[in-house]
Amino acid sequence: MTTCGRAGARGKLSSVTSPSSFLVLGLAVFACACGSKDGERTASSAASSVQAASAGDVLPAADEGPRPAASSSAKAAADPVVAIEAGKLTLGSTPGDRGRDPTLEPPGVVVEVGGFDIDRFLYPNDLSKPPKTGLSRAQAKAACAERGRRLCTEAEWERACKGPSGADLYPGGPGHREVCSSDPKSCASGFGVLGMGSIREWTASDVTAIGDAKGGAAVRGGPRAGADVEHRCAKRSPVEEGRSDDDLGFRCCGGEPSAVPFPLPKEAAPFEPATLGAEELARIIRAVPQLASLSGDPKFFDEAAAVRELESRVDGGKIDGYKLTTAPLAWRPALGEELVVVAVQVGVDSLVAAFHRLPDDRLRVASTLVLRKDAGPVVLAYDRSAPRRLEWSTCWGCRGESGRVTYRDDRRVVITQE
Image 1 (cartoon, rainbow, N blue to C red):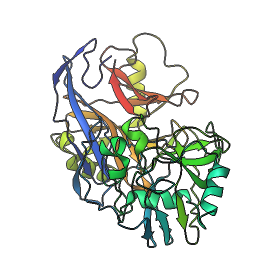
Image 2: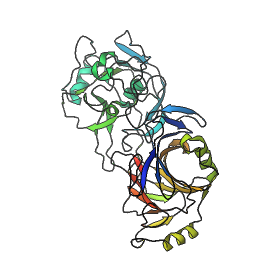
Image 3: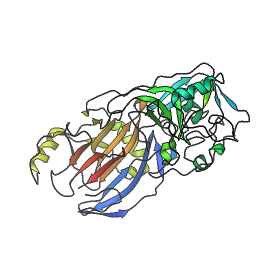
Image 4: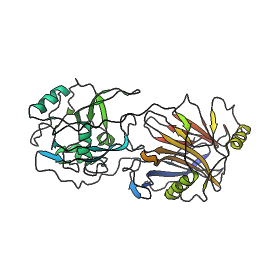
């Protein structure tokens, strides 16, 4: 098996591109190149990114590792309470973001949040004292009420964390800053709210149980020693409201509560036909630097002819239990996750690619595999009883001429050559 950056039975690592990534037409790509003696195979897998840009923008994005820390331009508020005016919030996270939970985090839905005010720091909102932890949600509500205030809703918490733009991935910017873990009192969001995401915080909202995800009280932020992605502004977790853990704090808000309903993902078939035109795909290929060397416009394979050819080229068993197609395929490997998978000819090469579907019919590259000097045809094969993977093949069971598109446990998409 050949994967990005790993030698396989017929492939060897030939070169690795720069680890920087790009956001293009709402897409982010991290690429590396692999080769085989049947023609060069080039694979790339998606990276975490900033929120998707408008068509035509090319912006730097994160690679697969932790995003480099960015200095915050936010200034800590002088007052103990920060007033936040009504404004837009990009609720949730962008499909494909590192650490994203597609069941709990909406796919970057833009909502309006009313005006409110929020404590500058965690309760008791006194920089000379440590945050108060170890209270249940009911006790936290009572503590706020004693001050004539209330627990914040999770939309208010996320708005305060993501700053005036409504789109910061982490408090104060695009990446996690170490100071937010080591010294939360120095970690300001774009609004000047301190310590957001440094520990878990109770909110007044609830998480609805859906699929395999449990419901409970909505908690924001991550554990003190959690990975950087645990401290994202979009991170949300359901917790039993009677818990009183020593890393569970809270802060209080004032004003009319702004309770924005979180859209729930809908159950759908794991595989269905999708629509992705060759012209749109050609624009994407031309815009992505790692694919720009492909010469020619993409053409979808004739399905009947391609399936006949594949069935005549079988090495190692029959093609049983699989649906075969060369058309674009909507793939839903997990609740709340939707991708589009394509296999196309591009000049003398073939391309297998998976794209995250974003709101407003935008796409973001999840993973690509280029079969150099191999015009196909390439057939996709899927089994509805195995929703987390599908196969691609030019010769069924032939080494180096087949592979998989896999949705991993860490929610990354990987295309392999086997």
